[in-house]
Image (spheres, rainbow, N blue to C red):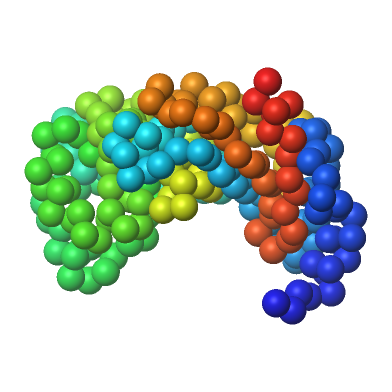
Length: 231
């Protein structure tokens, strides 16, 4: 695969065979973000889990102390006073049954996170085929099925991110932007790692975290020393 000149230059500073400590990895990944826009810094965490077994599925959410650097659009499914509460808390879109055809038939997806009160899940369930594959389906484990819509919205706007295994048993999550300071990125990364560490399935035999890589949107990845990171 042919890489651009910027990518190749950035890659020269990274020893692909090395396993870096957190602070050094964060510094390198910031330097590797050389695109003309503010790149997202992502963590890619390969686990020893087998997501085909329900008890080894990892899914949860954590509020990053410095946010993600991205403005998040929140859609809330609710009714009655909870609609007013969601609006007052800063939800970008609120509604109920009337939104179903707009999403199903018109392909409206101008939102990043969906929150629903438990009494609306029967309605939202009809959108499973649309929202499910995009990872937008509300879920109690992620705190997006709740009666406390104010807390859910505040957490999301403050930088709450959801983490879950993909089909390859890898977790991909943003930890901030290239414009963040090294300290902010390191704080966000540590908060994420602490949360994932606590989410280790009790049934898992063998190594839990196999590898961790930090990478900017358009740049090369930096591998971390898992033993030291998880210590």
